[in-house]
Length: 366
Image (cartoon, rainbow, N blue to C red; front, side, top):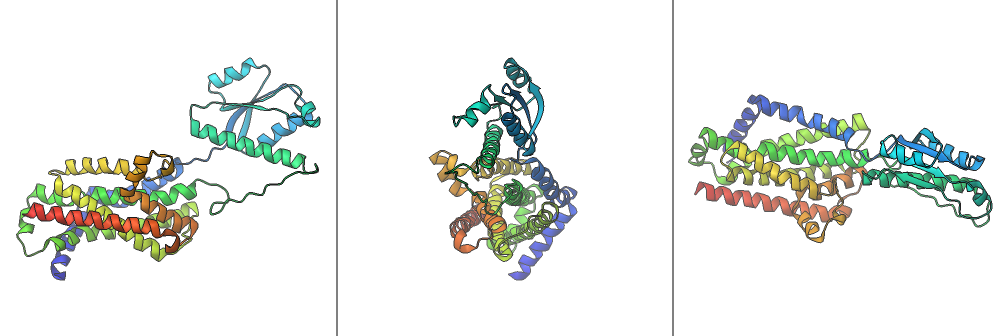
C-alpha cells in the first residue's frame, strides 16, 4: 500500500515541477497576492482632505481646528469664506468633508450652552464616511475633555483596544489573507489533478492498476497538502518580516488546523475534478465555488450583518471557520478552549468533502 502511494506521490510531484505554469503559481502567486492585497486592502482612512468654514473666527474655533489638523486624520487644504463654497468643494470632489463653525460658537461654549459644529461629508463611499465621522467624534471628544478637565462632574472615559492597540487594519487583513490564499491555491491547483489524467488518457490506466481508490486519493492530495504547508510557511514569514505580525498563539495548533483546512479544500477540489471533463471546466467550477466562499466567510462583510438564511449557509463555508481560527491564534493568541466551535466546524466540513470525494471516485471507476 505504502509503495503504491509513494509512486503516486513521486508522479504528482514530478508533474508539478515540470509544468512552468504550476511553478509560477506555486512560487509567485502567493507572494504577489500577499503583497498586493495586504497593502491595498485596508480600512485605515488617513490624511482626509477637508475644508473649513469658520464664521466664528475666535480662539475656541481655531483651537478646535488645530486639534483636527494635529490629529493626523485630517488635512485642512482649503479655508472657505461663505456657505455656498461648501457645496462647491464637495460637488467638485476637492475635499471629503467640510467643517462648519457657525457664528457664536465660542459664546455658546463659554456660556454653558450647546456649541454646534457641522460636519458635511461626501458619502458616496458610506464605509469611509462612517470612519470619517468616527474620527471627528474622537478628536472632538478628546479636545473638549482636555479643555473641560477642571469642570466639576467631568467624566473621563478610558478606552483600550485589545489585540490591536493602534487599530491597524493589517492585523485583520493580513492573517485573513493566509486563509484566503490557501483556499485559492489548494482548490485551483488540485481541481485539475484528475481532469489532467482524463485529458491525457491515463485515468483508465490508473484505475485498472492494483492501486485502491483511497490510495489514489491520498496520492493525489498529499502533494498539494505539502504544497499548502509550504505556501503557508512562506506567508507567515512574510507577515513577520514585512508587516511585523507574529503568531501570538500556538504555532502547532495553527499548522494542525491548517492541515485539516487544506484537506477539506482538497476534498472539494477532487469533487470538482471528478465531475469535470476538461481543465477549463474544472477551473471555472472552482472559481464558481471560491467567490461565494470568500463573500460568505466574513472576511469582507460581517456574518452577523447578513440575512439569516445566508448566516446558516456560512456553516458550509470552510473559509469562514478557518478565518476564525487564524485570527484567534495569530492575533488573539487563544487556544482550543476558545476556538472549539470553529475547530469542530472545520473538521466536520473536511470529513464531509473527503467522504464525498471518495464516493464520487467509486462511482466514476464503476
